Structures are given as C-alpha cells and as structure tokens.
Image: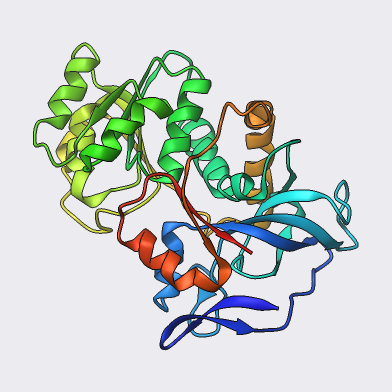
Length: 322
C-alpha cells in the first residue's frame, strides 16, 4: 500500500506492507484523513507518545470503509463506512481500536468525517468530562481558529454555555469565529484582552478556559478566570515552558488541569469516545457539529499539505484524499 512515511529527508510516499488488525482492532480502507498539529512534530522526526522517528507513517484520524475486523470486535462489520482516530492514518489502509471507531451518519462524506474524530474526543473530554462545563457557564477557548478549537466552540454552545469566547491572533480568522459558535472574540496579542474578558463577564471572569496555547497566555488566562475557575491545558502552541504566577493561581483557587492522550490507556480512550458519542452523536448526525474544510490535497501531496498547515494561514481543517 501507499503511505506517507517519515524519512531523514522529510515525508515521502512509499510502498509499505498493509497493517494487520489485532483482535480488538478494525482495518480501514482509508478514503480521507485529517491533518493535526501533532502531525507536524511527527513529520519532523520527533516523537509523539509511542510513535515517531524514521519509518513512522504520519496521521491521527481517518475515514473509509472497514476492510476487516479482529476477533474481539463487535458491532462493526466489513463494508461499514466509518471514521476513527488512530496512528498511521496517512495511508491506503490503517487500523484503529474498535472503541475509537464510529459508523458515519447517512450522507456524510469521507472528507467531512475525517475532520472530526480527534476534535470530537479531545474537546468533549476537555470541556465536559475534565472541564466540568455546566449549562449557563462562560467558556474561553484559546486557539479557537484551529479545527479542534472551532469544534470546541460549537460543543460549548451545544452543551449550554451562556457565553463562548474564542481567541485568534489573526484578524481574518477572528472575524470568522462568530460563524462557528463564538459570542465574542479576543486577540491574545492585545495586552488588554484579559480585562476585556473580565468586563464581558460582569467583572467576575470566565468559568472555564480551554487552553491550546499555554505558556504565552498562562498568566493572562488566570487573570481572565473567575475565583474557582477551571483551566484545562490541552495544547502548547505558545510554548511548553514559561512564567507562571503562583500567587494569582492560589488567590483565585483555580483548578489547573493538564490533559493528553499520550498517557491514556486503551480503556480510558474507549470511555472518552463512549461519553462523547452519548452526548454529541445525535448532533453530529444532524449536522449541528461540523468543521470547515480549508483545503484538500491528494495523499501523494502529503508533504505539501503538511507545509500548508505549518504556514498557519488556514481556517478549519486540511484534509488528504486517499
């Protein structure tokens, strides 16, 4: 099969052996795959959890037809149209655990489906399970113009948030956020943004912040949060290390929670997906939760697609057709 493989000279398309599904896995004939920020690190030869280095096939989410199922898989059969999260997705065939595999709603294209698995499980977990979002609370999503952030705003609104604030340093992208769930937008490059958030929440600050930026906004996040607010550290696009105001953290009694899928067990990820489906799947099937596709590339153009994402001029998702 063809696959996008990491080499010392970058990502190249190679012929490699197709994977064989383990007992709890599903083998998918991939038709489309979504690009994610973590793919850039893997493509550069860095490790991401248990994967990485020369020979790695890039990719974390994909959609296609089930070609084969393992002996322990139930409820999924060959021929089913599915979406899934799993490693090595930029390929003609990929495997996923059955608990991370979901049948496509009728009428959903493979390209649309390939944008959703990572964003759905990441943001439902961050907002609802870990973040404890309650109806009527206010939410700020840092890095809102990325695919995960765009879906996060929609999930927050769907789950009953009273005020959804999205951030982006790009004015053109910021202008689009209100079409995708934001009631208010901020520019983190503006030194006064935290004051604006506090003012918009009647001087109290937001209940919940989903932070995909981290170091560069860490202290301003705490300024924007209310007493007993929650901050969920999902990503570190603005740096993994930086200054942290411990006194402000203590004064506001903020719950600061870090999350990653890299240290979660198979069972934990299955439960994350089960809860996501229980809360969100009807809305996904009805087209209420979806992502814009900025641009689509062919699998043979995987290196160009990654370069396009790295340039950071897109809004929504970049997708590979296989």
